[in-house]
Image (spheres, rainbow, N blue to C red):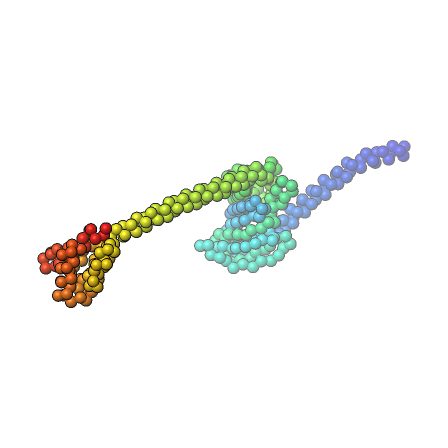
Length: 325
């Protein structure tokens, strides 16, 4: 009989342990709910929680926007802890002054916003998201107003949202969910996975674009280098041609050797102008007396080195073409 009693005790042991674990779980859940109720009971001066936006990043950070309508001049709201870049914004996007008080894993924010006004709280935190292997989990709790408060969850592009528990009321939106709180203190937990294949494809596309851009850059450099080389060649040819042209408009040395000083000065001036000039200009430029200048020009004209023409009272002087050789 004692042996049988012992066997009965061992057979029931697993069931008893399982019952105790289940009981402990529900006790813990109840305590957590009571704790949440206790925390959010500290809030004051809030007539409604209008909407909450959770913008979840790939690295687990969440940008939060929480909109409240105030029932008093001053108000206090509970947010997660720790947070970064906390801002409280009132009417006309005015930055409001606030104070904070630590409440364990939460922060109590007090501010002056004005009765009936809507105030928005902005902050960033990595306290809402956790990761286990490839699975990410976002957890959030808040005070809420049933059939009024809306919670927008925005996930990274191509996120796979894992099956939700049946007690969460939601509707899908682009890259996310719209959740409808069903209690005055509302909390949820949602699991999701980031799609690595899309990320890999994006990385591959980025690498392809980088390589393509590099090849285009090389082609452009070669194009402009070749074009520049062609221009240099043309410029060299132009220079050679120009030198030949200049050489063609230079008076032959055999003629210059036969000229005296004044004749040489006049021929040199006509040579450098490469066109006809007035006798008066030659006079002013050389300083040769008019009678002497007229005599010198007459001698050069008789030797067919230059020719003159009259245009009214102006006398034009020009070298003959043959003197250039």
